[in-house]
Image (cartoon, rainbow, N blue to C red; front, top):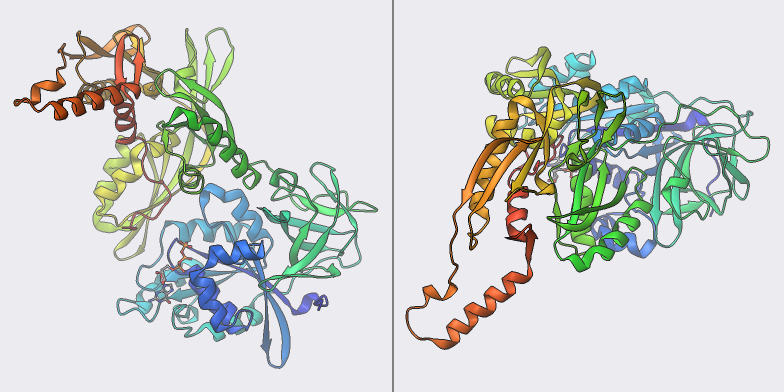
Length: 614
Ligand SMILES: Nc1nc2c(ncn2[C@@H]2O[C@H](COP(=O)(O)OP(=O)(O)OP(=O)(O)O)[C@@H](O)[C@H]2O)c(=O)[nH]1
């Protein structure tokens, strides 16, 4: 059965915004169940077996936009719940999903209160002029303090604390009232029903069976099944193969009218042909003005990814090609490192994006990878006026440099007030400057800093976590560039540079970096038959030095008795180990040493994840 179009006055488009783990998915599940879109048995199956079901149906079940029927005072409404990527790494995409809604449910854990991403998402929603419905979740928790946090949110959003709704996504308490509230308080979508069609792409997902499934919100006019459509940013035309709504399975429709949310399939195979933020119109007599400016996501953080087993290189390339089908922001190019062999220099939107991709490569494609420390883009101007963009510290240009500019972020940190001192110390040591500080309640404070992105991607988040006992949360947004006194530090083994360890650091940190790295390498690289100097250098100037003393390695020295089979085993093991050695000049370095040296301070955790996660 094909659902008829709903008149726009009976449509409500909303999203749920929340800090990680504040219960967005659980509340969404409860709504699906309450509105009868998913029945109780399927709900459990779906919950437990999400991935299998997704594969079976060939489309994302926890879809980007679900249409739910809901009746208020005898009138039937269509509620479209639009999912947002929910993370600042994907700010542009979050903001596009928000632009597809008229309102947002701001969900806050009643035992935790406001966190950094609560604020970040709220500000994005406000920039998109959404009506905000503040809601406290998890009121069933024994540790919930709804009164306290209702006051906090009330102050933030500018409403009376009594107007903050209270729900439990777990028990379902308060959820029907919340849905009623959505219908009563959110504005219905408005749009020019008779004008040429304009629909915004707010998400685009690659599906193995159906190609790219594109999620759209129609603003003006009407999209009809089987018409030819045009993407305004590229002027590319495609035939519509299917148009429909998700409820929660895809249901084909004849058309989508103003305010309606649904999906379309054109047979394109790559999400870059159906870009988030683009405007879809009819190929014939279509609109000429896009809905909003379109911007391509720009990678901000770069890291080299190398397979531990060199023969996995083609597999890594295939895996990246596959992931790219579904991720317009993923960029990579081949990179060769003397220390690590063949791999790729990959550009990410932020640290979380990096972690997700790395985890997917390891889990879904069964690859063992080594990642170099994350770095940022430096704009280098040489004395002779040439400009170079440096994505990889080892490519830093030789010669006289006039200026180096680095990306700067605006960071928001939230923590109990007892940690103010610790946070300020940390930000100070990371070249931060304080922009402002506000008390959200008696014992919770929000600090705003500008911080170089390079400092955040290094080990900021780990340090923040340990200095605040895990109680601080952090959010950041890149905001332009700034000149800084930066230098490239090289690490040399017997005079040969080891590219994987080159770093661009602040001049004042260079010595510290050099000494620490040299010490680390000294402990990790086994003694050779000759003395090996480890040096840290800025250009030709040596700033730190360690020595690995010569030693004749006799693996048999541990065997006192004459156990021949044990001796043979040890010799075999030594031979095995040799295979995994890399030669830097005449020095043999086990690959494990590189891995250990890179992983212990390799940037670590995501800067934007919740520090409270255990
Ligand atoms: N007691 C209680 N626990 C809840 C409630 N809602 C969610 N939870 C729990 O809180 C945790 C996080 O819930 P999710 O729904 O996964 O949170 P989320 O915000 O979607 O998290 P992300 O998708 O990781 O951002 C889970 O362990 C849930 O079981 C609630 O109302 N009461």
